[in-house]
Structure formats: structure tokens, C-alpha cells
Amino acid sequence: MLDGIFLIDKEAGMTSRKVDNILGKRYGTHAVGHLGTLDPFATGLLVVAINKGTKLLQYLNDGDKTYEATLILGEKTSTGDLEGEIIEKKEIPDISQAKLSEVLQSFLGKSLQIPPKFSAIKVNGVPLYKSARQGKEVEVKPREITIYSLVGTIEGNTVHFTAKVSKGTYIRTLGEDIARKLGTVGHLTALRRTSIGDLSVEDAKKIDDIKDDDITNGMTLIDLQKIELNDQEEWKAKNGQTLFFKTKNDKVLLVKNDNLIAVYKRKNENTFVPERGLF
Image (cartoon, rainbow, N blue to C red):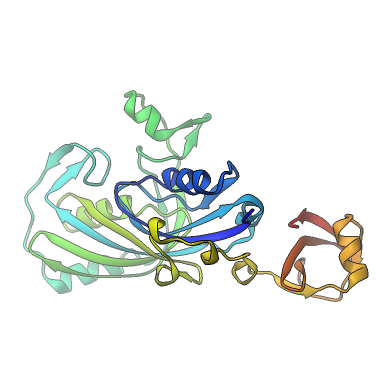
């Protein structure tokens, strides 16, 4: 039985859950999950864990993400992308490269963003996209986001931009906001995620090209201090016993001969107790 993490280059037209289901069927398991959902029309890096690898998802760095997007000006859709219905058309003013750069620079830093109605965010236990399809109006609270970098070019009615953003940033909404500041409306026709934290789509493979040996146990993907255990410590960790380490970190990843054993958290001083077993 395989345990670990695959880096998938998701193709357009496929939901993130569909990728999970394909791998689950291929390896005969229901224990499959992914880090950071991609919209069906979007492509790019999707981190998928199977079996014991699902225990690692909460410890992976998914804070910063980089996207490449194509924004068509002049038409707004119900979903903010090419899959929705056109709900508004507006003339496009003359936009120079300098004007575009000025507008893009205005988005840098922290701000509040209201997630799109067609998203998987749940309000009162119901995903927003379900409420939107039923025509129900749901109050969506704005979220704080950070845009670290945002550059782009314009050709006619098309803007191509690359954005490095914080977790929880919706690029569809960002595209609509860019269009509005440019004096028009717009929607995304393409979106590609190229990185999550230190992970790059260049290291990922299409779902049909994935092989067993493409899986990783996730050790290099977890941003925690690694502590190599001796035989006695390994036995104690596997039995959930208290261990003692001198470290400034409040959480540590315990390993033995390249095998993941557990994540331990500080109780006090040099005393650590188990948070989650990984073996």
C-alpha cells in the first residue's frame, strides 16, 4: 500500500475532487485528500495525499501561492470565469502598459477581499456555490489577504498577469477588481497555479503520467524541524510517550531512518508530547 504525497499538474475541465477519485480508484483507497482546491477551469499544481499521507496535509506549507492568469476585459460573468454566463458588458477605455502597471501596483500589500459567490466556502454549513445555484442571497464576510507581487501585460482586450498571493486569495475576484480599476469589467479565461510555498509545478506530473515511484513520504515538504530518533525514542514515540528535546521550536517532526514517526508539540521547557502519529 502506498502512503505519501503526489504532486499533480491538474488539467483544465477536471475538478480537484476528480483527481482525488482517480488516484483513490487506482490505488484502491478512500483515504485521499488534496491541499488547496483548484477551480475546474484552472490548471497547475495540486498536492494530493493518499493513505497515511493525508495525515501530513495540515503540516504542509500552503501559505503563499503563485498564479498565472488571463483576464478578458469588457465582459463580466456570473462566476468570474469563462464557465459562467455573461451578466454585464462594458466598453473598454484606452489602457496603456503604464496605466496597467499602476493599477496592478495599487493592489500590493494587505487588503480585504470578499470571496466569490461561486466558491466552496461554507456559510452555515452550506457551500456558497450551492446557495448561488439556488438563487439564495448569502452574506459573505470579507477576508484579509496579502498580495506580494503582481505584474502583467495588456494586448488589446486581454490582460496577462502573474500574482504571488497569500492563502485564501481568490484570483477570479482579483481579476474582476483589476478590471474595475481599469474602468471596465472582466473575467478570467485561464488560470494556472505554478507554486505552493516552495513546491513548484515544474516538479509535478499530469495525472495520466503518474507512477508509483513519483510518490514522496512528505518529509522534505514539511516545514518542521526534523529530529532523528534512536531505537528507544522510536519505541516511546510509537507508544505515545513523553519525550525530551532541547530546541526552540514548539513542534518537531520525529523520524527514524527516513521514516516519519510522529509530530510532537511542546508541553513545557524541554518536554514534548505527541500531537499526531504518522507511522
